[in-house]
Image 1 (tube, rainbow, N blue to C red):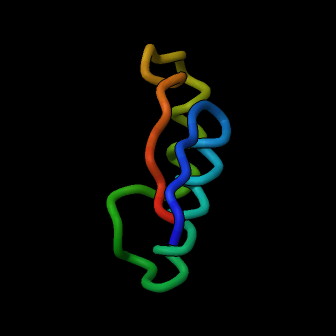
Image 2: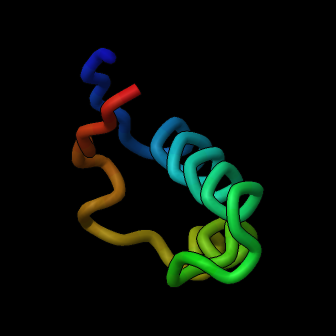
Length: 57
């Protein structure tokens, strides 16, 4: 296991992949669909988009 910090599009790709893995294990678990984050991303820029987020891979 390793720590990685991601921001911007790299963050969006990582969190989308994580949600896809959750959905592949169980179709109704989790709060969000992977496509929802991509849709929200295009809405408006947020001040926190450029802040690194921690991922354990």
